[in-house]
Picture 1: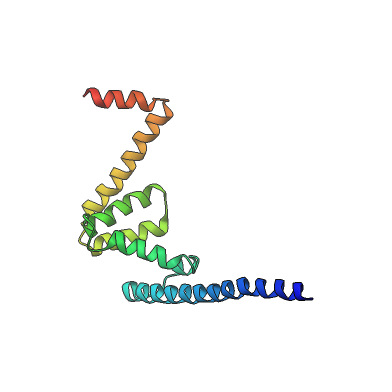
Picture 2: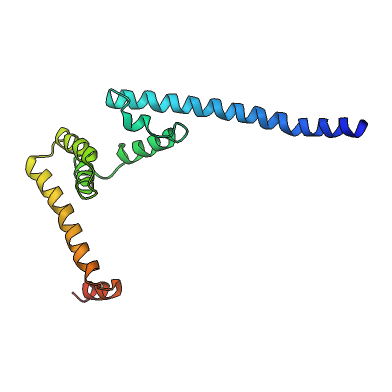
Length: 149
């Protein structure tokens, strides 16, 4: 009986702290989620369904990543970021992203001509990528061609 009691006590010594740690981590995750959600609502005026579709536990990290890439420390202007993202979104293609980044590009001062050019540059990159890869040109050969010029 003493052995059984000792084993039970030892198990509890390990289980109880793990249980308490998991409760604490869960509370921290919830706080981080609420903070990220609040910041998103303040930034965009709403908590879009795109954010609602993201896993709750991962949203705070994704939001921090977004802020880091979009924040004042970035060396790319807000307008150019949106033009780049519009170019990529056009080639994926993603109608949601195209709509969002086109609006944001305009809001950040992009002209209709700059938007057309960004989309055309994305298409041009995709076109030449397809031609090069589809023709079986090796990467080594391409590098050699570009180095010789």
